[in-house]
Length: 178
Image (cartoon, rainbow, N blue to C red):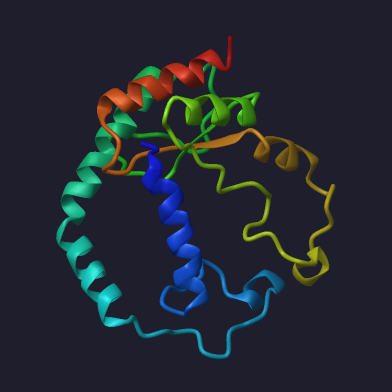
């Protein structure tokens, strides 16, 4: 759920990245399809401890994500609401992606209710390259994919969300089809 901490968290992420204490999601050359000179990085001790802690919680995290995926499966009719993958209630999706006709409106409505939905897949190729020619893609060459990707919304499955939250989010998704 959203809270005042989200904005502080975003600010801290930017500051820590600028100070070199936190890695960026993408390296600069990655968007240019450059091969990294040094493909592996050592984790700072703090991140290594965090990773080790998260690994011990992995079974619970997977079970929780599967539980929320089951709520979405049960609530979102596949005949009405297209999903990106064949959904199975036993699956533990990091991103549960559905397609809605009015993505931006849904995301705005959800945010007003305290839910942050994702749109990680905003282009047919991610991360979006600085120059499409470097990856040998011509914008407009896949018009169906380019249209569909603008409808993608990722529903949350993290531990911060409850089954009740998933139910409310499902209701918001269904409303976008009314």
